[in-house]
Length: 617
Image (cartoon, rainbow, N blue to C red; front, side, top):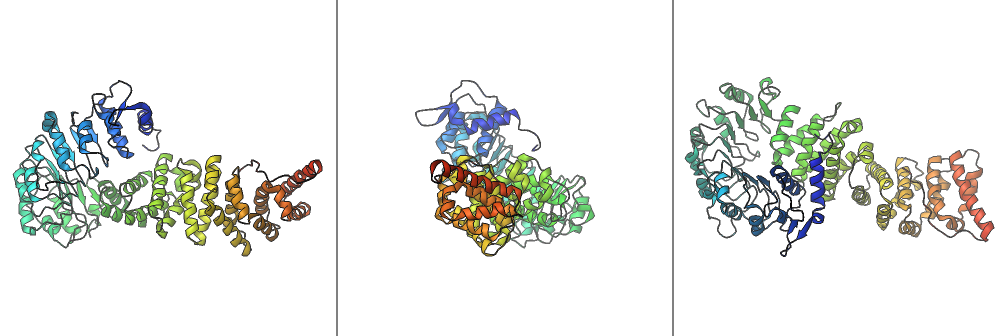
């Protein structure tokens, strides 16, 4: 997918979401409505809403475009929307919705608000099939208020990371059509209420039920009655020592229709027990074994009909990243093992990188995830591997690396991981991303750290980025005094050490590019003794043509000041030295000729005026 051009629909929807106000007018209450009277097809309306949610653009004002009949929504995604209960009701509750994903909407709207709004539409009451209410508040006023019974047509409900209690479970279990339920990380202490839906429940996810107070035997007694289950998830974050997984695997008269079982993160799980359980159920298609001691036998490689999430090989790790992208602990575990496998990569694997990107995007503020992911990104894109990666995928990766640097500015290892990945010709030259913001982030890192190896990479990145910025951006970047001061400090350090290396060369290139057509940057350069320092550089490295070329290129912008600083003699020395590189001699001659002609004509040296120059990489 990432190797193909964007579809025309995606291009149009992205443009519309980015420039929404240009296509809209404002109502009296400040909400937006589309100016054109046309009606969006249902599939396009659904996709537009999903695109706006992905970019974090859903708020009380923007959701106004979904009022009325111009949009016809069927499968609505409002993840992480910042909307009120009133805005939700007006924008979405008149549509004929069959699915709604409201994961992580802001705290101003509760589960009770959402269900109350949906319940105001009789069609939705009877026909809404899938509802996702993860990471929300049940009710601000009455935590014991029951509301789910209004949605009699509901077939699938996900209500994870919510203060959801036994009484709520009893109400949900009584829904007449319920087939799929996810109650992970809720406050349930007893699952006995599930017996009310034992004849119709096909999928049950109970990941990390931390408040459960039932014994293993009591839990198994309930599970045994759920004879129609196709999928069961009793995974955990390795926090409990319960033997529930092993005890379940030992049962022979339980879950005859099961095709998917997840026991990831559980203790006491063995290959022998898993194999015996699966062989008794030949229809099994998946078993989750990440963060367990199982998954290492030939039977459980995950490369055949039976899919396995685990850590024993790349196939298992990829399956884990696909299935657990919303679970930070499992994402971190999978990435940790992926890092070990990708130390020596010979083949480009965009499908694996895409899974890493998903994990990074879903957990932007989780340091362990970002640390492991950034390390994996480097392994998957280093050297020639990046050349085989689709540009779109690399653009996503680069954006997320910069976000990680921004979110964790003081974590040295994370910053190193990101810089290592960014220091790639493929990324810096070919990939579209915000180079201005990237340059600022890298400069901030450079000012706060003195690691010599990382310093070399940082200045290399800055010199390349600066050459690709617009004149306005270069000027804006150069106006930051700390940037020029830090670069000059590196030049001074290398000159004092009499050291010519790539760090010095890249630093000089960066200063050349930053001073191009930027009077403010030039002033910073002069006020921080840049001219005097560059005279010292010419004295210190008289035979280094690459150094002299960069220095002279920049000094040519300060013709009159060269005379005041005694720079003319250095120029004559360079011009007349028999071992000077011809190209460097040419630059020196050009500067001297310009000065001499001006003095002959006007009787004085030229004023210090910035002249446009070509940029050095």
